[in-house]
Each structure stands twice: as structure tokens, then as C-alpha cells.
Amino acid sequence: MKSKLLYIIIVSQILIQACKLKEPDCGDLSDVITNYNIPDSNKAKIPYTGTDTLVFISDAGDTATLIGQGKNTYYESVKSNISGGDCPRSSVMNYQNIEINFQSINDTNLSTIFLKLNRPINAVNYTYLKLFLNTKGLSSFPLELLKNYDDSVLINKEYIKGYYFDSNKNQVLYNYQKGIIKLIDFKNKIWLIK
Image (cartoon, rainbow, N blue to C red; front, side, top):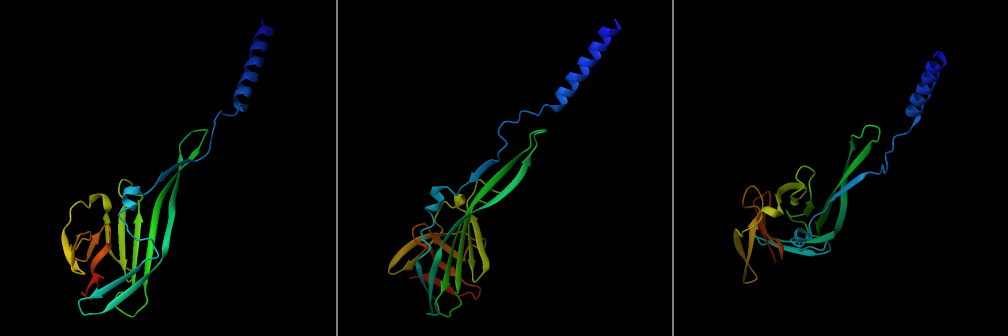
């Protein structure tokens, strides 16, 4: 009986040690990657290639010529751990951004226009168009919420419809085919696209 009990104790100890040494079967531990790309339908609402030349005429008769400095597309990544007990994994979320910068070639109040199209981390269901004028943030609005035309302006004997997408409802008039058609700078000068 003692030998049987001793046998059971030894076998139990061997089994316990074998279980402790066994590595968990985790399978594939590579990062879980999710890309939040800007939908093509929203990319189509930005008519700029990045190498465009924009010419604006002010209500005072000034001309501002801005040259596109290219289009930059990149991702902002956020990495976090996924709880998995013995099998930890990471989640990587990539948020797409597109930036277009225009620089003035003449000395006016309108020296730079910077557009940023992105899928922000806290609002992945929307694509935001952000506009900076002379490095100051002017407006930001989700493209999905722009539905109706708010106004139109007379440019080269043609009325062009657009909508305001800033909180002041008067600073930037935008058209999907032409881009910015009217803006008001920080000195309240009104600029129309030529």
C-alpha cells in the first residue's frame, strides 16, 4: 500500500511539473492592424493635386498667388496592448492623413494656405477637412456633414455655388470641384478665387 501511495505521489509530481513547463499555445502573436483610410468619396471632394497654382483677388484689388508644395499622405499610428493572459498581443490603429500646403510668391496678407484631410482618432466615422490660413487654424469640419450649398459667388461672370464649413459661417466658401472659392482673412479682407 505504501508503494502504491508513493507511486501516486511521484506520478502526480511529474504531471504537475510537466504542466508548469508546457508553454501556452498562443498561435499567431503578430499585431492586429486596423487602417482607417479616408474614403475615396471624400478624397474626390478635394480638387487639389498638390502642385496647383491658386490665384486670389481681394476686395481691395490685391492679388495673391500661391503655389502648391506637393501632397503628403501619411498615417498616424496608435498602438495598445490587447489583454490575452499568457498570450499578449498588440493592436495598431493607423489613421490616414493627407496634407497640401500652398505658399505665396508675392507679399500679401494671404501668405499660406494649408489643408489637412484626416480621419481623427476620436472620430473615425468622419473625415475632417482642416484649413489653416497664414499658420492659424481657420476651420475644421467633417466632410460627411456637408450636404447643401449655402451661398454662391460671382467669379469670371459665372455664379459658383459653395458652402461654408467653418464655425463663423462666413470665412471659407468651398466647392468640391474648385476648392476654396472665397475666404476672409484675419484682417477681414475678402478674397475670391480667380
